[in-house]
Image 1 (cartoon, one colour):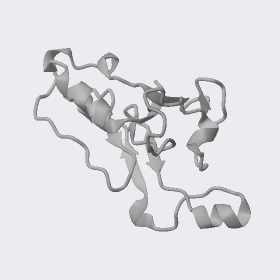
Image 2 (cartoon, rainbow, N blue to C red):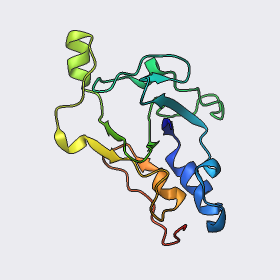
Image 3 (tube, rainbow, N blue to C red):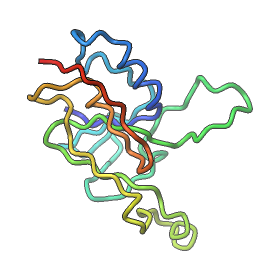
Length: 152
C-alpha cells in the first residue's frame, strides 16, 4: 500500500461526494496530480528516494505538472493539499522554512508547530469508513469534508 500525496483537494472531494456510497472504495478516488510513496522501500513510484524522517520538497519528489492551467493563470503549482495514507502509517507534513533555505540552501519544516500536520492513516480501514477518510488535508489551515454515509 502506497501513500499518495496530491494536489487538488477540492476536486478530489467533489469527485468523492459524487460517487454513490455503495461504490466507495479506494479505487474510486480521483487522484490526478499525486506523488506515490512506498513506505517500505521509501521510494516514489519513479524510484526517487523519500526517506522517512526527512523533509522532502515536492518538486524533488516528481509531482506531475498541472496540464489544466491556461496560460497566465495563477496557481500554487507546488502545493500538496491532501494525502491518502494507509491504515497503520503516520505522515507528518509542514510548510517549508524559506528563511532557512535562503540562508543555508537546505529545506526544513517551518519552526511554528501550529503549522505542522500529523495524519494517521485511515485508508483503507478495517473499520466502517467512506472514501472521504482517504482525503486527509496536508495543510494546517485546511478543513476536511465530512460525510455521514458509512461503508460496511
